[in-house]
Length: 42
Image (cartoon, rainbow, N blue to C red; front, side):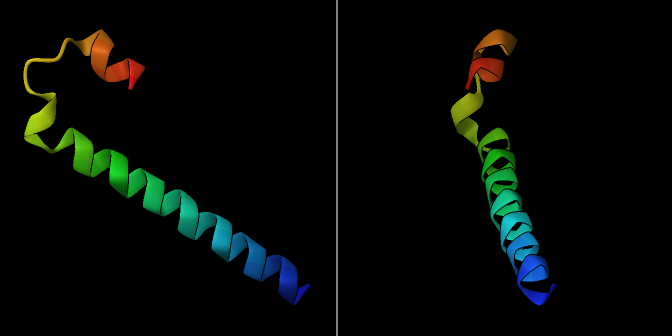
């Protein structure tokens, strides 16, 4: 059971990192001037 919890922790850790990358990108100047559809496609 412990290995299962460890795997879940690693999964959520990786998912959180991807989420944080998306937030940083959305907060950056690099999206200025992009259309809504262009942002969604990324």
